[in-house]
Amino acid sequence: MQIRLNKIIYFGILLCFTMMTFSIVSADSIGIYNNEGTWALWNTINSSADIAGFGWEGTEPIIGDWDGDGVTDLGVYNTAGNNFLLQADSGFTIIGLGWPGVTPVVGDWDGNGAEEVGVYDNAGTWALWNTSTGSADIIGFGWEGTEPIVGDWDGDGTTDLGIYNRNGNNFVLWTDSEYEVIGLGWEGVTPVVGDWDGDGKHEVGVYDNGTWALWNTSTGSADIVGFGWEGTEPVVGDWDLDGISDLAIYNNQGNNFLLQNGSRFDVLGLGWDGVTQVVGVWDADHAWIKSVAHYLKLLDNDFDEISEAMIEEDYNSLSMIGQRIIDNALEAQEDNSRYSVSYLQEAQSEWALYLTDLSSVGQYTILISSDLKDGIDDPQNTEEWLSHLSSAIYHMARAVELVYDR
Image (cartoon, rainbow, N blue to C red):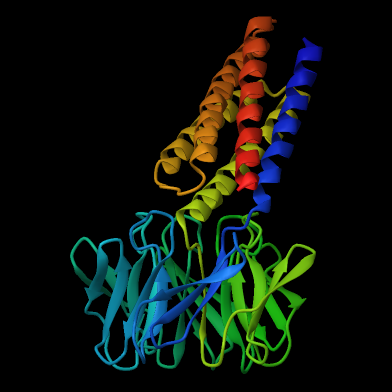
């Protein structure tokens, strides 16, 4: 039996290695808007910009996943008309929301997987669009002179509110009627938001001419990072799909982006005078890849825990891990059906087969844990476990091959 257990651990490690190779493909990408109706969105497949026309002179760019399909859609805020114009598959949607002097914001206010718009008057009043009622929910949070920031502070899938207070050089974050004050900042900084540690929750930070101060929730202090120089603007996105927000800067002098990507830097020549920077997932194929990377990370953790449970002979934990594999695989299957990819159909099909095999792996993990707890040596269950895992590895490797063949 011990030989079989060692084989289980070996195949788990092999699977994790296979999964990690998938995360090389980038999903988050940069773009610019010229505030006159022209967008240039960086295409990571052909390393050039796709040009889109949407908006008109004097409008401000906003972006979000308005329909919940995983793809970032375009939008503009019209300061002259105090309304939003949102891109949709069938054309566009107009939302009358705003008044002079407001700052537009975007978030998933109800946690339904689609993003909505809103405004903050920089004096303590938020108006957040409610798609169910077709009107704005009014919230009082903040005071005069504060700037809006938004993020998922508690990792529950719903966007929470926050403000940056320039007079006090601090942030105030609001989560479920609770407030957290974070003393971070100094005169002239730009507030930023990202998931700096990959825990699924957003944290705050500030940028100042090459110096980043990123809040670390574990230490209750800021991690200082040097990246950039005077006159550059901060940009944040997950360039390498590891679930951790990476840093970037936009260089106004050179009209280009410098992206931090692991141990290297990527320079993307995109921009011109007066543009506004944006970050998004511009097509369904990359949106699907980002979803795959998310679930691979969850399943990777599951298999790490299988190895630990087997070594420690903790069969109760092994059973719970098996159920979690089933749950994660089923959730990934449901999410997989959201994406209408254009050139990765075969890879998407292989991914679906991989998830089916993983669900069976979870089921046999539960059976094996029950056998081991009762002192039963059932070679058939172990062989079935290995068979489904071997098939999963094949389909995963095939999916990776199909992605990189494009």
